[in-house]
Image (cartoon, rainbow, N blue to C red; front, top):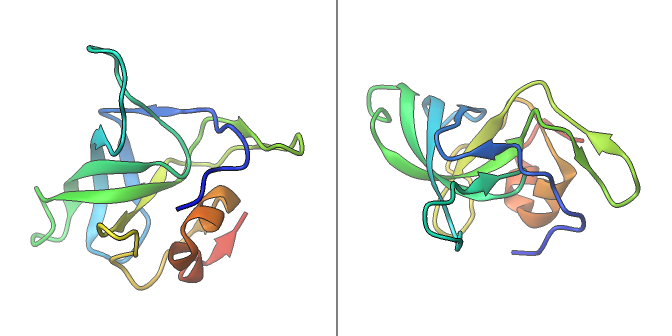
Length: 132
């Protein structure tokens, strides 16, 4: 897994609800943790585009509800700046479910994904509809 080219502004935190934008069966998920987060005790972890999070499925197929999964954030509403000066923001906050090795669990992604995610997770970009 590569590092990001720029510093993405973190627009989400633990407790945020995201749209699951793939065909895995989950519709709405809630962030319950961040993979690899080390910080001061009591500080709430912040999350941005390209981060791996631990989520609980809140709405979706009956087989998926109440499951704890790993996901990667593909879109965020909070504006962030790329190294070339371009500012990017999306209409919603969205994620895609992945397994422990970083491969997507689904076979297609309905919406666009950020270029930062495509650089870091090539297999996720391969099933995406568009890369912005």
